Image (cartoon, rainbow, N blue to C red; front, top):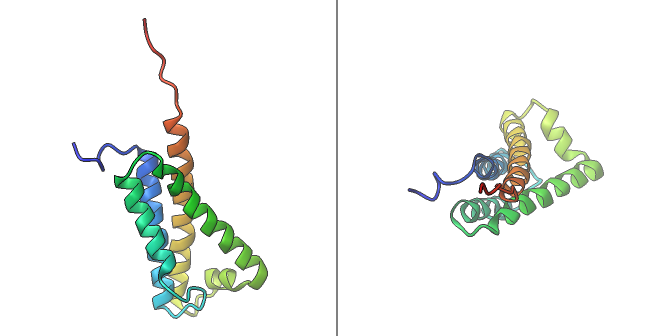
Length: 129
């Protein structure tokens, strides 16, 4: 059986969220967003997705940690500059608007899936006598 088919639903949600977040960031970059000067963020997200999907069980912690750090960074940037909030609400550049929403939805999915995967792995299975 393939390692990917053995993943829990939570872990799959985490991996999908990481990939969608990376795609959203790349769409924003292609639309001319100034928030991302390089493609480092998407590369880290995609590498994390691969590690969570194919790597050891401890990689689940990275699957939660990476989007949490990026999410906190996005919130701090939104509070300090307001530019990310503007990208989420300004329909004058549809590409950046789409990328921004993909970014937010992907982060929410990755964080939710990461929390669920960690909680699921800690579930105690009763032993019947």
